[in-house]
Length: 541
Image (cartoon, rainbow, N blue to C red):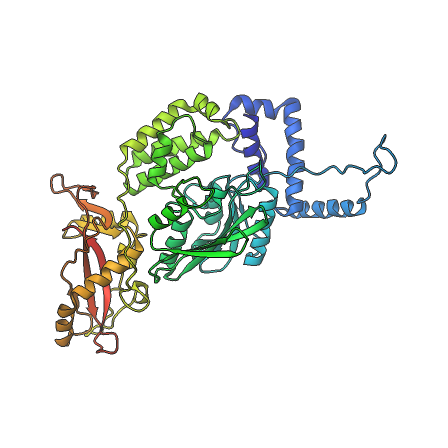
């Protein structure tokens, strides 16, 4: 319990807040720490820790007085580098030097500069964090618009930079209202094993579904450009780097470069996450395990009660809360939030599975029950070799407006924005309410979206040729015949239930197996672009 309180105290002193802020939920502990010797001890510890953080540049909200005090301390240290001999030490014997203890930065801590950090500065901070806390992950993020970089501290399993689940990240973003851009991952570390001092072999590769590769793919789909990210690991040779990425224009979009047995870089490419999983399972040292941390992995953990870690329980609660939000179920979201907060309180109190079971058996059962109530996400179809709709893919003409024959501008093309994998589910829910068809959906996979849209256009080429031969005015739409690529379910979304009149999530028994593509004439003639892709979306048959 004292350890858990200390984590909260460290969070507060790092941010320049009073040490006891937010810790009064446990009245007994608050009284013990606020009065008498316990209170005086904590005050002294926090003052020393705060000073150490200011000296190292890790503290936030640093005042001018603290800066001056730090400068004085540093000068004092420089002037006293020669330590006096220890009483009782033999002459000529090595004099032991007392090392200042290194404090782990609290999980979720966001490190940034008074002025925007350049990538080189952020990487230096990142390397310091890796050195000081090698058993935890840490990551560098870069703003997609401004180029500013920040560093986020993780735990021994992952780095959480989501404002919805990381309160420090939420405070950081809320402190910059209206700032453009998103925070893209640049580099992160995988932790070393305390027993061996190196990164365990299964962790020397990127995680798959629900992890590292999925982040790279999402960023590539957002930017419309190839993305590469790096992982810092420690092997028997020392610090080494793993590079992985996603290129939507490549038939094998997932790339991986890792150090081989002799340290020389080895490069592999994969057509899908399933292909990567098969490759990973056959690598020496992985034990035949899976790199994926998707719903199936969560279910497997839930099926083995008694072996959970606090970090895993928090992750499962995060996932449940996110899924509840997708399904617009506020009651489920609240249950998941309460469970997440309970599991956060276990940090520093319970470390072994036995302790977790003893303290949170009821909450473990509630989490398993909640996961069982939620319908799983529809499985993404197996990607085909990528086929682009046009040079540059869908992103090449996304957001384009056409000057129509009547002199007005058309609605922007919006396939990716409104029906891509990252289209807001709330927007789709509202669209289903007003859409004449009563259905609104998004694709599950950006690569599949690109490929099946290209196939739908190719299948309708005679129809397109006839349309263009009629010299359509600029701005006129052509709704292509529905196309079924034979991949099974392509998306997820909402529909208006004819029995109840209510908008509900599309159930698994109603797969979105077809593709609907809408083209818009530009008024130009070949070889110029005669049409743009106004929209494309998965549809019910």
